[in-house]
Image (cartoon, rainbow, N blue to C red; front, side):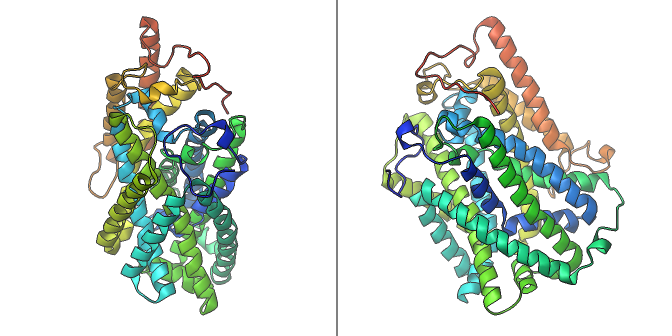
Length: 472
């Protein structure tokens, strides 16, 4: 039996080391989403002007739609036995995949930072050392946990899914004791821009998991049902995030400025004082630790994937692993310390900004994997820039660029608003455009390439290098 400390990085997980069941995806993603940043994300739908009733429905819709896309990526893990972003080499080329990879690394650093701001408040209160030392302590624990790797990450998810669920049940009861739920939901006036903002917030939350979700399913046995992986991932992520975000909506609708001035402090005060308060600070730190370890681990995988595309590296030493993880940890901590005083506005813009870059990647990756390659990849060629996938696939990169540009007229952020937003009443539909346009263009590109006999992923791959299974 393999030891607790993980030795593999971007290399293929052999069948002899595969373990676990698809249900592990439910506990991991439930635990990763029952946490304070998801609460803040839900609260943003109300903070920026939405009513509670339609915000709840909009968030639910975004969680299901974005979660389905995210879960389709998760189902790739048992089939390929590889980290998520390695498969992007089949679409963009062994070296060309560095373009979305660099953006993914920025995402990991950003999420590490945003999570550390809130977790740092909890750790600071728990240790009585203050926010800044709390952020630093939290970062060190995150880095150490990510270094141990896959098994401890899933164990952490199992613990967090139970502990955080119990805490959220308790907090929900406390909130409903002091709030009139009927009055909160009485306002049913529909505001399309605010409804779409809620959808976009939760969809972006889910889609941002896409670039690393298969990292945590790649050790599952190759015979694991793709449908089971898909549904357990979707169930855990959508349920956990909607639960947290719904709590955030109700807190923001009842607390107003009291919540805005200190999100962590307000939530803990809602629960009580003394030992209860200490337990809730611990729960907040535990929930953030779960997801921040995912961000750190995924960032380490993406950095190794980026470098290995040019160096031909397939394995990594323990020392190299620790150095990559330390780089993510230091960068994320620095951003957290610099941005902790303008958290809410910055985080909302960061989420929507991320959505702009990752919806085209998701569309291209899923169309290629499920519709064009039909879950068949030449695994050795994913590490060979002179192989079937080439070094750079400029056609796919062009489609990705078009997908980015197509969203700009519909994008709404604090620092930029597209010209077609006003005619739509202020609604942000950029993520829908970002999924549809590159998906259609890439499918058309593949069809034309097949007609001329040059498609790099359409040619059948002989065993044992093909990975072929049914889709969910």
